[in-house]
Amino acid sequence: MLIGVYGASGCGRGIMPLLRVQYAQAEFVFIDDGPTPERVNGCDVVDWAGFLARQETEKVVSLAIAAPHIREALDKKRDASGIALIEVRAASVVEMDAVEIGEGACLSPFVTLTSNICIGRCFHANLYSYVEHDCVIGNYVTFAPGVKCNGNVHIEDHAYIGTGAILRQGTSEKPLTIGAGATVGMGAVVTRDVPPGMTVVGNPAKPLIKD
Image 1 (cartoon, rainbow, N blue to C red):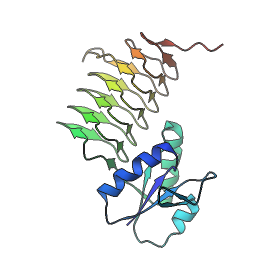
Image 2: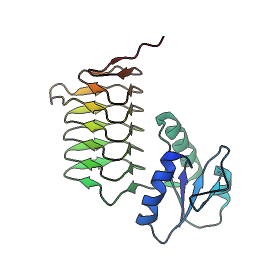
Image 3: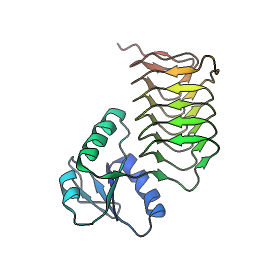
Image 4: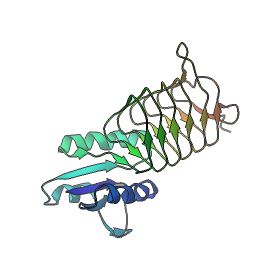
């Protein structure tokens, strides 16, 4: 089996070692369509066309791109080519009861998923992130390192939650909602709903006002 990690920059370089542990007998390449070295961390780097041209009978891909909309675009390109997605899961990931995860997740070391959680496609949960009980997370959502997503939080498609952000616990009657395409800044403490497309920063989190 040939495993391609799409993205040879920081995110991809963090995912590749996890896959090497999961699939010790596989072959590995980075896939990157931009200007990159021919080899990164001991692996060849090829573009998408070069990956498709490889002769291995079984080829799969991990989409190690942090930007949600780019990840979705690559997922559509992958699907059109008939290449399967692969989940990446560090050995230290903790998953408890009644957790549903869509295809293509990347779960980094020390991620915890507690109970009664529903997660969409191509979820990225970086180092030391957690998702508490009764959360619903959409497609192509990214957690940077150390995100604290407490119970009864709903996160819609394409949201990006920055390093160390804290999402206050909601209730079953009124979950805390992070809207589609919203960005929660590094270290933000979110105490109220974030509308779709909005960027919030600070403690408590407020809309970012650009000069």
